[in-house]
Length: 497
Image 1: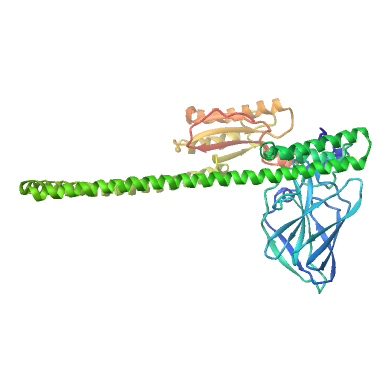
Image 2 (image 1 turned 30 degrees about the vertical axis):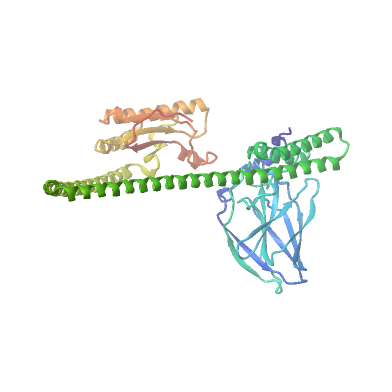
């Protein structure tokens, strides 16, 4: 099997360094839906995203006999597989003003062609065009990996209206965020590389179990393509077998997904049927209980009629029961009142505790940078506490930590996790040891100022957990820090990662 790591040039690895805005998946995109008219050809530019900068795409659309004929031309584009991960292809989508989307088919880009064009058709009357990168071309919903979409129309006979589109599927796994500097330079034929990857994805999605026969066909076609590629008999034949393998893998994926959905639906139906059967069983049991109750009532009534003495005895017993019931109700009322009182006291104590914690947190904020997190309340002590390469606290650091210790003596229910962090300068072992020593210095100093050791743990992470970019001086300064996490949870051994 060919390995994709060989398929990207060295400069292509620079594509991994991208801006945070590019790395964030879109939750929505502003599209321009064009209203096409009969027998009128409209030509417009597609707007490439930062994932494929420098690419030129042009669309031509003509509406004729109830169908739109679409021609997409491209220039300077790289194949989708260059993104790595599970990405194997581009897919063209048509999206109308109601937000309904249609998969028009694969947008095929070959590395040996600087430019090419493809044709599609759709029955939609008005639509926007969008291209996404996908793991396989029969996907039912566009992913968040947007490659390009059309801008607004300047043709007065084909006006456009904006549409905010949000119906994205999940982001497929990928290695690169942009192809700005990446190139397909593998000796492996693109068709075989794509066929291998789609075949692998089909296997992960359960094709061996749910679509065994067609999945085997995909494997056979893939092996035939590889064999023909090795013998160099026919480039066209290699492409033909590889494309047949891709098509079979796509069909296997579709069949697997549908059969899994059907199995899930069948399971849900069976669960509902089982619940209904249980309900019927409980209803039958309730009816039997009611019947027995009626029979017992009839016997009791007959017994009352047959014996006045028994009736008088029952009346006396009833009076006793009523008295006991009244006493019980009184006791229950007293219990409810007592419960309400205790709840009120608990709420008051909770409010007092919250006010006290707020004041203590404010006091802590005057001594160190603080923030809330899922792990607890975090105090951030920057690297100014220590001399370079040292773990001994500086005098001004001792004064600051002494103030922290004084505040933490009040917060007896809080446990402390002291964590040391460094930048990436130096070796892994050196930074791990230095961060551990610094964290232990802070812990020992607080212990000397009265904070119980049982409440504290310390550990060092070296440069494993940066909060800023280590490529800048300011980022490295931010990463050199000691953090104290306050939490009421029990302390546990912390694994370094």
